[in-house]
Image (tube, rainbow, N blue to C red):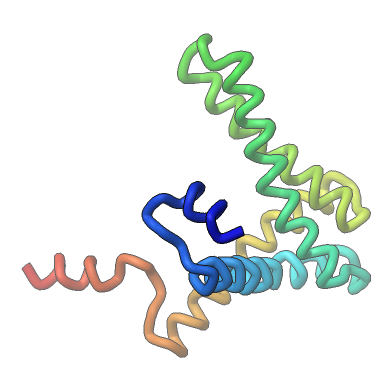
Length: 147
């Protein structure tokens, strides 16, 4: 089994390193699901579950990427404006995932998507105030301000 990993990752990967990546992905998935769960609770009147939010946060990006790639594949040669169409259609697919996962209408799915973004930003500000970070490039920006 380890020889398969060494073939896939020629620079070398340890089983511990792979486990760290898997744990980090799962923790990140749980953290990103919190805003969707809170938004789902608000929009659906409290009937949304954390499991539904986790499903939505996995399937939403997958639907977004699939739709965007399909639009690019079939219409990409028509010009740069197609990418705007691709982004809009991909976002609609993401809203559809929220709609289907939380068993709500189109406006409910859109409300969950928008509210999840707002909750995410508010949580980021709170975490920044508590832990002293807000932006991943904050040290770089502070260094630039000194010069």
